[in-house]
Figure: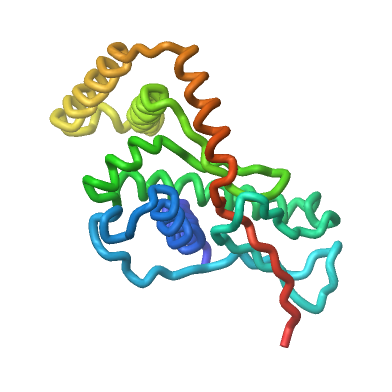
Length: 232
């Protein structure tokens, strides 16, 4: 059966969460040094965990298949993906999808699943995860609090602008209910006013980011775990 665009999008979102949600929640608890009960709004349900599976490639024996999973690993872990596979387009696509999954799922959890205490701890930590392509691990990166606040506001503004542009492109903006258009304008103006009010010292921000990122170099990471499975 052919999937429509909405079904494809829902499938991709479900896949991202099945791959990255559990390890992202575990990593947040590790990095914020607290228990799930304190960090999250409610107890974690039994989360489905999937791996990415790639079937035989020309560069690899045809007697099995490849798995890519995610786990918390030490800072000096190096993913054991064979060198001959790293240039393969399907493997590169898999790594890119894992990168996208970790980024999107971590951000979604931070925005919607944290308790008040968890939100405050996350704001204080002010970190995100970046893919180190040399080791295929996701390392924590500190961003100066005010700079990060500005990044979040700009992201919200871009999201609102995207909604407006999409509606215009489809010729649907004028047909929207007036209260929806007024609500959009109110949100947009509020965010723009908050952006305009932000000021911080770039030198101070750069200095603090350098200091904190040097200190957290030895923190654990999320690693891409490669394995080869032979057919039974």
